[in-house]
Length: 171
Image (tube, rainbow, N blue to C red; front, side):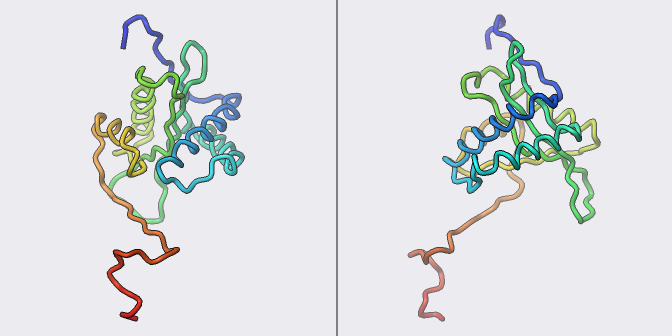
């Protein structure tokens, strides 16, 4: 990154940011559809606007600004499950940088700010999900020291595949 390029400012989101962030989330969700995400982008905009507003209220919504312009965001929380764990896990739910400014360290700045914020809230580790075929995102996280720790697997139940281990005759 050239020394003279402007550096991003990472800060907590303001209430005025939430509408713009909901639009960014729609772009993120549209992009994830290319990686087999089942989440409908436009149909969930209002729900995500409310969700992002809730992240903001709980101090879990960070934004990246470049020369005052909103260019990315990250949403984080502390895992609150019903089971007792021997570690406090922070969750990175979303991270997004506008395509026009990618490759300038903004994603890294958001990721580091998310880690620092979660550590300040008592998290021992940060967990995130990435689509299996989103190789660019997987490379990004590996570069920052993230390793796979749980693998989700899926299979369509609409039709039997030729590789089924049980044929219909096995009945």
